[in-house]
Amino acid sequence: MLYDLLVIGAGPAGLAGAIAAAESWEAASRGMSERSPDRSRIAILEKNEEPGRKLLLSGSGQCNVTHAGPIADFLNHYGEHARFVKPALYHWTNAEQVAWLQRLGVVTTVTSGGKVFPRSLSAEEIRNALLREARRLGIDCQCGRSVQRIERDFDGIFHLMTSTDPDTSAADIADTTDIATTDAAFHAEAVVGEYSARCVLLATGGMTYPVTGTTGDGYRFAEQLGHTLVPPRVALAPLVIRDWTTVRGYSNRKIPPEFSAEVSLENVTNKRREAAGSGETDGDLFRGNPPYGNESHGESRGDESRRKSETWRDCAGISLSAVRVSVAKCERFPKGLSRVGDLLWTHRGLSGPVILDMSRYLMAGDTLEVSFVPAALFGNPAALETFLQTEISRHKESVRNLLARMEIPLRLIRVLLAQHQIPGELPTSQMDRKLRKRLVTAILATRFEIAAMGKRTEAMVTCGGVALDEVNRNTMESRRVPRLFFAGEVLDVDGDCGGYNLQFAFSSGKLAGYHCWRHIE
Image 1 (cartoon, helix red, strand yellow):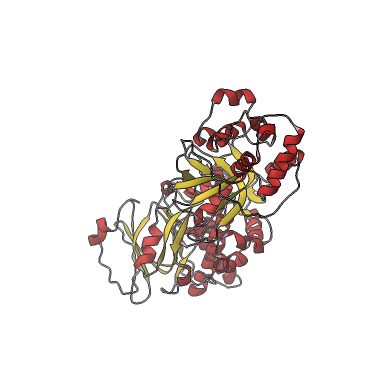
Image 2 (cartoon, helix red, strand yellow):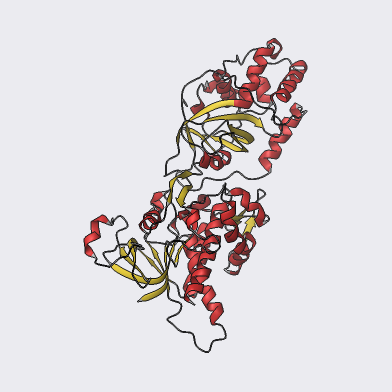
């Protein structure tokens, strides 16, 4: 049987692509006296035993399908790839995504932070709605079919070989088939079945969270066709920090002034509460292995005195809202990089939205500078020192109590002061100028060296993939192999937390599916 379109991967990008192609044919066939059964043969080949496994785990199973706001604002959330993603995002916007889901029976809700979820907070509802629509359109979704090799013959027809064993390698079955190939060859090998198609859409995802089936298969297929890969690596990943269980000395690194503010302790408290209430914190993407969580950072003084925390590891589970994290320089930003967001301490290092969003630019050996107070209040060490002087003149208290009144969690205070060799019980009135500067550095620029990036099993998405200059951004079609299309995470595109990656998966799939149909109409 010759298919019009074979989609590899039944994730959001693959389902969206297949549905878009079928919807386009359905719309074009309206008004025809007869519909040819040979013109809409679309199938999805999925290696897992069920479709959409990673989608089911997204957003802790709640599925953050997109983000609210103007679609133009999305372009700032894909790193340096704004130009490439723009046609797909404008072809299928977040508003169209929400309206489409509603037509499919999924009512959505928007959080105070702008994230869009199904009102049921169930990723399964999203997956089931997509599958119902695929069935209605006659799309054949075949699970348990692991594509192993893809070839393209002299007539431009793609031949895909599949195995029922997702772990079967091409090398294991290389002698079981005999299909002529060309220099344009596009390989996918199989023991059980052979499929042929006019068009192929690669929507295999990346390489992170491999338990869901995203093991980098699409990269292998793309390379076999002659496509170039940007080396894949983890993104939206937590960080492992060096010397996480030891106490180190403080840094005297100077902080360049960014802005100043006249503040009071009341403002600190209010700003902390505003930051915490401005939007929800991102839940971990995957149930059972959270790269990010949100545990309350409050503690009583009695708890603090009993814990006797001495290392950063003891602070696991504590989070801070709207703090600044900076790196003086990194490979992709030689002049430095700075972001503001929520930060989480883990048993091995740092996580939270601000870390996850920065991780695509970081690597082992980079050094972060972390602030412990809201960035909106203290971006300038001079402003913080003035604030400290004012508070010291008003109150007779210890350094530890001063920081506690600034709403820094008590466990963090103990370790922070130990790391910077500042006596916590010292009366603030006895602090000289040198010690105040040391405290300012501790609060605004404590340094952490990255020992390693989070593992593939922890990272949410993949950074890297099929090189974008080899793909037509207006159609998602390969510039090297006619009628080969790409969608979603297999491309060198990764977005921030907050629904941006799922939006690109749907948008790129919709754009690719539409242009697949134009090839076969």
